[in-house]
Length: 286
Ligand SMILES: N[C@@H](CCC(=O)N[C@@H](CS)C(=O)NCC(=O)O)C(=O)O
Ligand SMILES: [Fe+2]
Image (tube, rainbow, N blue to C red; front, side, top):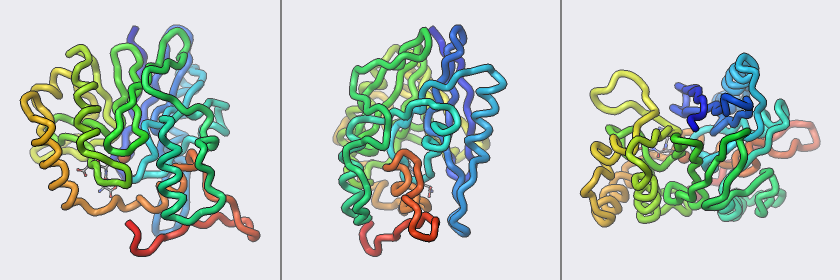
């Protein structure tokens, strides 16, 4: 019942990409892939995504799915690039349509679709996808964004930006459509899973006193030790603390380029008449 899991950590954006495989059939999924982006030059590269492809090739894996836990605000997604290289289908939570509508208005991009059709599969709570002989179960876990989902495969859950490592806490809930109360409720669903369930986070920022990056913890470790949501912390306490902390956080460095690309499943905006793609910067909006 356990999938084979390889993690790839991007030290530029503190993002973890996972390559998850059914060891029997060699069907694989890539979760939350990163497209490298240098904001100084506006140049994208595929070094990180190519490392995942190389690992898939080494393991003789067939990539069937590219799974996004949400439209990321801190890094560009390599989903479209990986789809073009593997033929895999890109899945994301069905409420991505809400996120597309919100940001279509903020960026005033008329070509931006709002029906989710840039993605191949919009998934909802309780739905199951096949990963060879394994099932991928979708858990709707909104709060960080209104479209966040987690993916359960065997005894592993890829929680995206809901929980982080116990010593770091939880994701922020202040992006458009984010909601600390919903985040708390989503986290409670995850923490109600069997105690030995392995949780895999989408980010790690270390924590005071910790020297190395980490991205895996069990449900029981999170329940006992998560600094924001350990057992005994009420919804009201969490919402108050999360809201206060969010007021202190700057926007992610890459939020403007990341969102524009990620609501198109990681595709760059359509090239203009000179063949070049451009990103927009809305002034005084975020
Ligand atoms: N400094 C990072 C911050 C990224 C960030 O805001 N990450 C989100 C997830 S997309 C988060 O929940 N961060 C929690 C926190 O910073 O406490 C950046 O600029 O990229
Ligand atoms: Fe995020």
